[in-house]
Amino acid sequence: MSGLMSISEVNRMPYEQFISIFGNVVEHCSLCAAAVWCQRPFSDVSQLHEAMSTFLDQQPLAGKEGVLRLHPDLAGKLAQSRGLTSDSAKEQTSAGLFDMTEKERQTMNNLNQEYKEKYGFPFVICARENKKEAILKGLETRLKNNSEEEALTGVAEVKKICRLRLLDIVDPSSSTKSAL
Amino acid sequence: MSGLMSISEVNRMPYEQFISIFGNVVEHCSLCAAAVWCQRPFSDVSQLHEAMSTFLDQQPLAGKEGVLRLHPDLAGKLAQSRGLTSDSAKEQTSAGLFDMTEKERQTMNNLNQEYKEKYGFPFVICARENKKEAILKGLETRLKNNSEEEALTGVAEVKKICRLRLLDIVDPSSSTKSAL
Image (cartoon, rainbow over all chains, first blue to last red; front, side, top):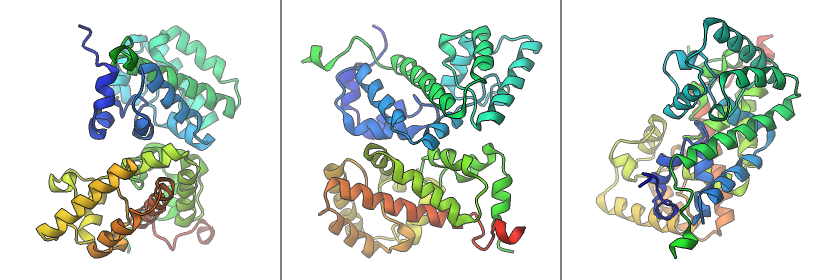
């Protein structure tokens, strides 16, 4: 028993349940789940993830930047005041972001600030696939990109975060094909 | 003293304040406000509304349908259980939707249901520009459209709702030109 739901259960859900369960797989962006809902039935969780990725890819540049702007700063004020969504709090914990020295926190805050001033949106990285050292290094490296490259890089990270959040909910071995 | 804010105040806001004030001018769709934020300074509230309208127009069809899906049913279960956003509750009240006979409510629920089954998204109309009789007539008429026409018609209503919500917040006579 994995405790995960099967894709068939997902396909049978009424819209209200779908949006309450999947509304935050892209942080604070329930439009993403709302947009893909009409594409049911999904054959498996990969296909659901692809539908969401396509939605993100089809956003105009302002929309992509908006998606990034809906994300909190890593190890920022929201984290310190416990104002993060539970998804974000778990992810930032797993990267060790709640376990930084004062110096590391200061470095991260300075780089985050520099990043936001340069691009107009916060630095987004899949925290579950990176530890704090890799995140600090990523911030420094990505600060060299131009604004459009960086919006695309950020959205690619959003897709990774989305995939892991989906895998927290839906059993990846379930498929409508095997269920027939 | 109108109690409204000037466009200059809007332009000076930090992002967090902007999203908390404008995040629901398109119902439950904070991505819209997040997307247009980088286009400041706005010369007046009309230009802010145009930026939001452009964002809606640039959505792929699935995104437009998603925007509609984030809206509640008119006089639906959420209204009866007081689960509406305060914006929606005010608008539905002004249209007289809390003041319907049992027969009218039943007719509206049946038409809403038929509409959602046909299109896969709820019927959206600017309630402040229509009274319950016009809304019932609109439902009947619009049920004759095809799905894509209806998504566009719905989004046109979303823009009207958005405009009136913006005018509840920002003084329409304020302009960055006169402020110089």
